[in-house]
Image 1 (cartoon, rainbow, N blue to C red):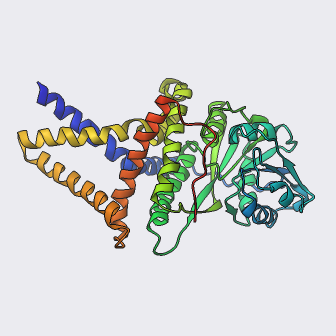
Image 2: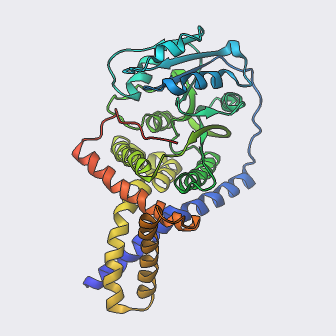
Image 3: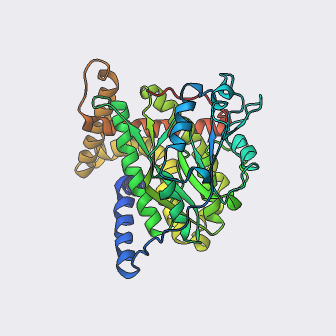
Length: 390
């Protein structure tokens, strides 16, 4: 009876893990193709460029703030229709002097540093345009970003549009290369999610939304971008995806900095899973719940804990039954050995990029477990220390 139970758990965990990594992508792609066959994709009609407000929340970003403002105006969008608001609450690096060189840019600052959510909540009260675009100070946008984002709002059912995050990397930079590969796959999933129904959470580097739909963010929320997009989705609007509107960001300085960032994201992910519990109601939200569970809940809540349990259970079944369980255990040992070896040798030898995939995947799930601990303990603040980037 004991081993029968272990066998069931083993195959359930195998299915969930493989499904979360590549299975959902395959299923999603197939569903999108079926939808396109029976319901051809509508051509987006061009609309008059609406007035937009670009919010740039930042903390001590004086070294790149001027470049960011220049980049914001250096776009193929009518300059007279762009309002820029920089929110630098808590900053102590003379950001105000940088912004003072741009008379058309509004600068908001208060000594209290309460986090990005509080900064956006305060800045949104100054917005008078129908469309708001949030973008991080440490990213640069492509010239057509605003055009690509705003034209999606020609569909009255669209309440939010997410841009794409792209990682700048050097040819021999394995940390950035791994992060970049992950975001390429994640971006493709977002594109397919949007094609089927809606994006399951946007990246704060670049998101646009109808100002009237903005949900006030609780100040303790860690992932403000995810909260905004999912709340708009739950209100009955579509969250679309514009892959040709992208924000370029440097990769993390090293794997330690990337882990710091991912632990915070994981803690925020667990926080929002419990804050957005109604989204698990598949009777009410139907395919939205299916996509949300497949893309987010399994990856954040189940897989990180399934992996170590899967290894232990596989070891017991291997010694009891052999056969396919021995093969599966050998594959796991090979993958974990590859990840561990990369961790120790990457300082002295440049491993093949294919070896970085199991390493990066293992790091992601390890960070998810650490993030869960932070969430349970409650010591992950919405105000956090920035990760060092290249």
